[in-house]
Length: 144
Image (tube, rainbow, N blue to C red):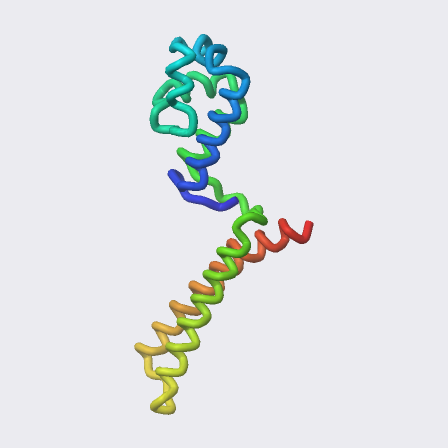
């Protein structure tokens, strides 16, 4: 996965891990972090409710600790995620459609000026960056 610090995908993974930890029993988790089991039950699925208790729990749970670190620092590892490939392919399709529209508009007068060239380069780089950083790793993850 490649995501900046604080990315919503990382936040959702933290919420999933906290929910998975409570499956062992809210009372047990509550004892580990010094709160009532009913409090832990109310927090399920809401990573914001956990506050620093999530940090306390991460001391004891390596997977949660790794997720919190990734959330704080971001991940730049280029490994794909098969679950997001459809959305990424749609983003490429949308970007390519925008690019084709701009190329057609700029070619109407039979030439490309400096300003048009700069705009087209920006759009093309956007498409290439999306393909290289997300779509290819996603498809490779699916391909195996």
